[in-house]
Length: 467
Image 1 (cartoon, rainbow, N blue to C red):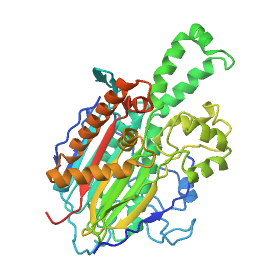
Image 2 (image 1 turned 90 degrees about the vertical axis):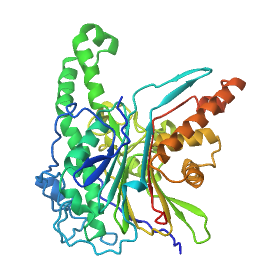
Image 3 (image 1 turned 180 degrees about the horizontal axis):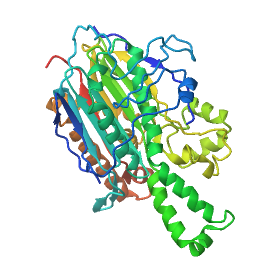
């Protein structure tokens, strides 16, 4: 019998602080990994998580960041524990803890996973479409005998951040023994804390990685008089200006992240930014319902707005622009311009602290394999494209994507190609929608809103144990 899905959300303290798609499974020991492939020599080995004793005290966490798996010992706030108190037990991705004693109602299996990703596109009337940039989305899926980890990362302002995060996760989590014990951890809050800490430390280490470029940027800026206009600087300091432009492309990138960990008994989700995780489940009457397990981190989020106004930013200005500086997301990995470099952005420069943060929203639900149907992870390109196609403010992308997946599976059955086929259907529907509207009036609302779309990435997990 289906039951109401109850998510447990844990709050954490705020801190200042063209690729080739490979949809095959890669064997890595006993585990299997879906991923996009990059040149392994393209990026240097990433550093492991580290923070000072002062930072650890300020977070009220017992931490040890020198482990080669990157995974820190972290205290955590449980759902009932007051803010500022610390668990009496140290936690770790690779903790030596008592394995969970489950009834294995749902067993993770590579056959239940489907992934797809297609690049951005700009349509032209009766002409070939084109991409404005390479696909800046990425994903990871890790399957072993104990658990599944599904991730979607949506990069922006270049691909530096998203490539860093993918390589970081492979090197510091999936390629270590630590992942084996993650699914065996005996306490819910340990996994939630580990997910939170992973995103936080990844964000911190990304800034360590771009640190030399940031220092060089500051040095070059110091050579150019502050009162000098940009065109004057270009004439008087052409070498410095050219190098500053190169450095800006290296340090300006960022990415969203949504990470889901599924054990045989519980589903955990952490996210920063506006990539989403949707749970589709069946009620006792047979109707299909959905629940969004993530938070969209943007200025339209009232909690984020309150956080930003608390550090001195103007509410009306944020609402009018719809952005934090130049960024749509208020939480992310990377994005130097709204974190370490916010003083260089006029509208953010008077803030009392860094407006952008890398602290995720974390939630979890107990898995019911008899009512749960799908777990859907997607970049914002998916649901925003669907909303543009519908042209109806009351039709949300979450509802449309769930309906499309259910209709596809009902008609053609489940396979590993479901996600990619659904994305291709979305692309074709939007292309036809644009062509029809543009032929009638190229300046119409429907034509302009469907003229182009962002990268789209979709990762699916099917829970149904009947097949």
